[in-house]
Length: 102
Image (cartoon, rainbow, N blue to C red):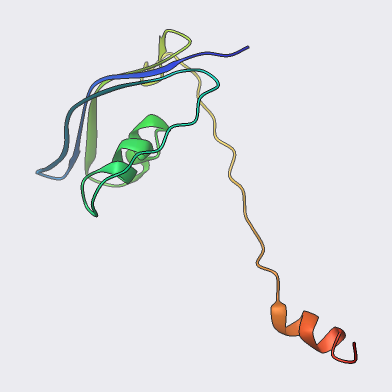
């Protein structure tokens, strides 16, 4: 089942710093989207708002609407969970020692 993700009028604050101001964007289902801009323009903050990671940081606030399947992900009645991945880095030094005689 594919669905669109739509952000409407998203504002984000870190304390008194207004980091995002009235951002609205629609992501079509099945599409790949790149957010491009200079350092500090709010790309990562916007993505953190889309996946609700922004609210894990102390003294932050988000207003606006983020719709997935026409449901606001910030609705208090909506049960949201997350899955975190942990990537292990491959130890190149070990591999070099193992195949040193090749």
